[in-house]
Amino acid sequence: MCLFQGRAEQIEKYFEVVGDLRRRGFAVATLDWRGQGGSDRQLRNRRKGHVDNFSAYEQDLDAFMQEVVLPDCPPPHFALAHSTGALICLRAVQSGRTRFMRMVLSAPLFGLKPKTPKNMSEQTACRLATTLTALGFGELDAPGGERPLEETVFEGNPFSRDPIRYARNVEILKMAPDLAIGPPTIGWVYAACRAIREARDPDFGLSIRTPVLAVVPALDRIVSVSAIETLVTGLRAGGQVVISGAEHELLMERDAIREQFWAAFDAFIPGTRVSESATQESTVWA
Image 1 (cartoon, rainbow, N blue to C red):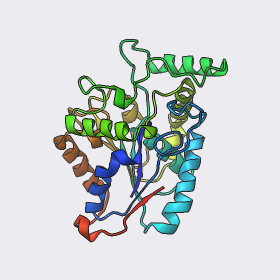
Image 2 (cartoon, helix red, strand yellow):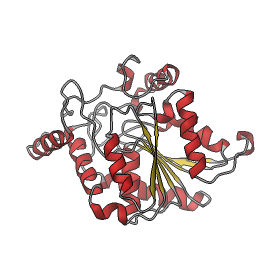
Image 3 (cartoon, rainbow, N blue to C red):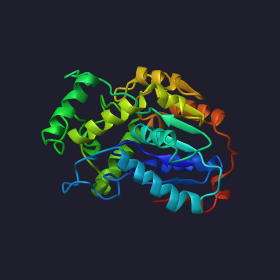
Image 4 (cartoon, rainbow, N blue to C red):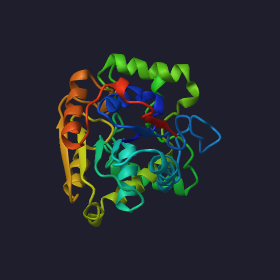
């Protein structure tokens, strides 16, 4: 199982998820995308979440598959990807750069959700990011971007309704501050808008033959739920499951939400449940 994070996340945040997958009998390989976690930053300021083009992420995925997964991890290969990682993964599969037997996408970034109080539409945000990037302001923080997780409070957060897992993820960044990044830059938003626009081409979904399951949080305030439905409908072998009462980070949610996620996962991805103690040398970090 190849595990791909969302923007501003890190391997350490997913230790519990790795354990869930190992108990299902999967070997697990994962990485930190460039610009976040333990990977090198794109700008001198380590706190800035920046990338010029999503093709850079696809190069990361290429290197990960060629240097880690294919030589060291037993097939068949599946993918579990969250948010930004889901968009990166689907683009790589569509272009033929990567192959998986099946993919589960958690809250995939197929559209931007209007943010309050500015309530800026995706179209307006993308136009603004395009203009500001062209004027040379791409390395500045995007207006209205979310604050770093370790500087936030649980009440009213748009990520999870589980206070224990939320506190755990905050504590990880307080203990290892070098893993953290801040809000996306204007250039990152511009790159994301371009990637989303390309994924909305009618021919995009028709060229993907890999079976895909999107698991969608009904209360998502980060990505557009309607955009997910539209894109998944255009896939040759795509389906979705919507989980009521869930915020953006499904795998960091309350147990009742996570149980629904894993039920959908187990019904879609073939696997054999084994005890964690019976799984040895089954996790590869890149």
